[in-house]
Image (cartoon, rainbow, N blue to C red; front, side, top):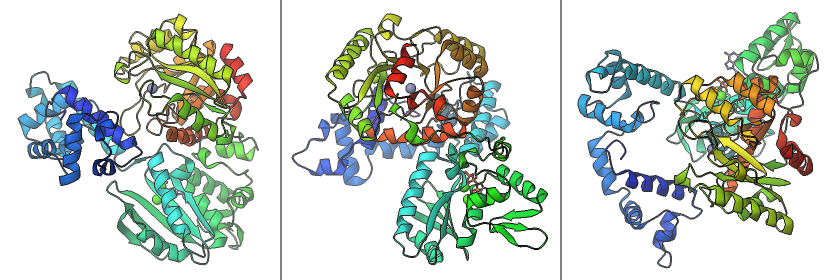
Length: 559
Ligand code: DGT
Ligand code: CA
Ligand code: CA
Ligand code: ZN
């Protein structure tokens, strides 16, 4: 619809409707089938969409969609995935060149044909080529939560089998990498080989890619995530876990170390070079120990100094999820969240948290019905009353995810911000500034004394949008000087800061918050991914403000 130039109001209503349906607890088909229920009672579904939904339920499609598919090939949607190419430009290109594939578009750019069209030039051609290269890099990789959920479901499917001892995750998923190429599972036990059959019967398997003596590879669903399942001998489990967890770089360094010690390391075990005696292999700890190393947490296995630390018994005691005492970034129905403050608080209490901060959007996000000064002040008062009455069984901190305006100033007056317990300052617009301008913008933001943390500080969306460029070191130095924490946003689409940035910021003395940016109670579980990222960045509990007990945390806010 965007490419076809449909009415923007209509596009937005489809978008909102789709996102409501995605998160809605009931099935839309059930509501439509129920004569007692009205589909227009679902928030975000108006009369227009109600008609469309009924049509889709009845015919599997709708008129507008069929028309669009006649006009454009489904591949036209791929053009929208190219960073820096908007729907209007896409429409022009399709109309003028009749292109239907990304390869054709790439050729046009290489042949410098785009510049023949008005308002298009060499710069756009370069940008599109870069966008296509990025898209190819991203394709075939999956978000961490997508792979994680698939792995859990398959392991559940395998668990129904008798005679398995271990079913374990290895590979990049075990290392908690931000995106996953394929899922690696290892299975041991007297019946391990039967697991190689059983995995092919998992309902979401789309295609069996290969079946060997001790390995099956399958592809899941339309998305095509690959899962490798390997069956192993009990005595090799540790060595296989070590080998298939990787990373490749870590493994190479480890194997060289083994050779220096007169040993050889492979997926079956650690053996002496001279007479082939097995030295270790049943457990991972045993393998590392025999190499003169402490066991290394998977998240650190990237050959970035962890082997040296393990040798010197100086590995950090990485933060764990149970160290977290509260979630500090979440939205409610006051803006674009799907649950009320009470529901979010109850979900957080059920997770065992001592406190939560509610941080709805500020008014610059008008589409999300962001808070203005008056609503901010009222909200702070409401939270004070809730805490006095103590009725929710969990301490609430009044917060705000305050927009950073184009010039770096805050979207909300400082006086109003001062009423709140905590402020997360985030960029949601004007992300294409020159690096120097973006740096100045963030430095100016840090001048506001009410800010607790910079939210999703680099603005990246994994597999979708790169971080906006700015002088990261300079901004972190200033944040450290002013006592502003950096957020590790645990939303699996973001994981922002990245582990690399976390490491760099920690080296500069930064403090962090790890939070979920939840828009629904179930999103609070994304803390898991934030913690994996923190661990990959080498953080210990003391680096993270929301590991503090309530009083200490509250005091840190006032300071
Ligand atoms: P991914 O799947 O791209 O997200 O990343 P990984 O790390 O899961 O890579 P994958 O699935 O190709 O292989 C799993 C592990 O197996 C990898 O982390 C280390 C080990 N591995 C694979 N190929 C090699 C290799 O050529 N040499 C060594 N030393 N290890 C390897
Ligand atoms: Ca893998
Ligand atoms: Ca693999
Ligand atoms: Zn945000």
